[in-house]
Image 1 (cartoon, one colour):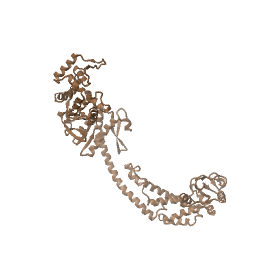
Image 2: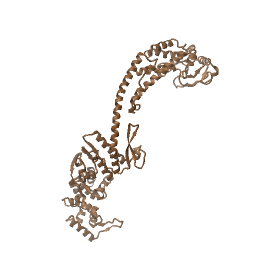
Image 3: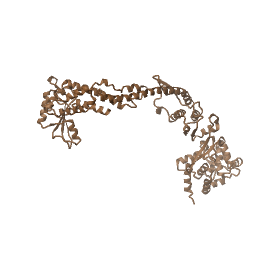
Image 4: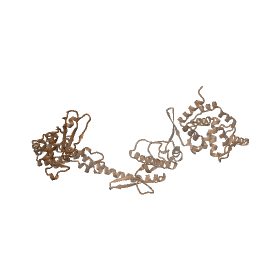
Length: 593
């Protein structure tokens, strides 16, 4: 129905204003050049546009010509051999369905003024111009659309179509009246067609907005036919159904807004407490708008304005922290069976990490009493949850160490007894039956904690740097020197007495010079950590791969380790991809066979 009414409106518009095509006004064709369009393989056709035709010569000028001037122009064109064509003939020509005469010309009349009909139509009829023919065609279309007109309107249109050239001013006004109603009717139909999210996004005003689209045919006297009423009744009925649902929706929205306000008030204090203890200089607040809308806004504690563009004010870490908190509240609302947090806090510093853990698992409204799988590279989280304060979590958390080797995922439980200080781990490994060179790795790191400038530490460093003659290295810029025999003996006695009874510098040094021995130690090592230490000794200049080099160096020194950690001989803390790269270098210098 919309499609038919749209055609109906357009037809009326065209029939009334078929002469109103924009163009250039000419006072006289005989004295002013005509505008033509040249097509390389087509026909030159002037299009002449008139604005207004009036008898009063005092009004003649740039935009107004007299009927006599129009007659003279038409005579001039006919004498020059021009043939008048209609807009439809031009369309047919451009579509390739018909041809134009040798010298075609088109007359157009801008704005559709009343005088176009009073003076122009008789002249065009007299000279057999195409404008009369075009109006006749348009009025014929009215006959096909008669069911949409009232009986009275249909009868009058029929009368007008019988006498196109003799149309009166009253009849012209009548047609313009029909056009005005049609335009207004089409505006309502266009509004319905365009109705969507943007026009109805304000939920509180949906009902008021929908009422604007209901059609009252009592305001359209010419269109108030039986068929029009049938179509409009269908549209209005559909709108009434939507209005009924919109009313229910508005009630639900009102309840939802109350819930939102209550929820924001309840959680805002918790969020602000988290922001404070995490060291973020922001606070959230609730703002009310129009007594029904409630918004959670973010403010800097040193300012009064709301934060409008988060990306410009908050760092990545701050945005991540907010996202975690909001995600937690989303979980509380959705209540899923399982929550998975994939490494959510590794990028934060210690104080913020604990504040986030406290917010997620220990607060009044948190993820406690829920099944949560937290994957992390951050061992401090494990220390807090398993070693330091498991009693603060509910239920008591469990932890496991996950590794993948050759596509196989392995899980090893971490208990409180497995979390040990580095000193405990070092003493345990030094007392084990592992090769003495591996024992010296742990001893050197233990001494690095206890006395990094001591003689024993200095002596062991020379073994790992593969120096035949031990050197004493100063940390204050003093040039290095050879260790004296007395220093070497004192260091050896300290190591043999307190740690490794059969220690001998020359024996360990010779191991570092024998690639075959080192390769055998590498291949027989029970953990990736031990492999990495042997690799470091074999490649004293280290790997050319910057990623591998950084990992090797960090694992070789104590300053990058935690005070508490897992025993790397029992837990493969070195990723397998690091060892895979080491394996490649080993094979290059020690090929198989």
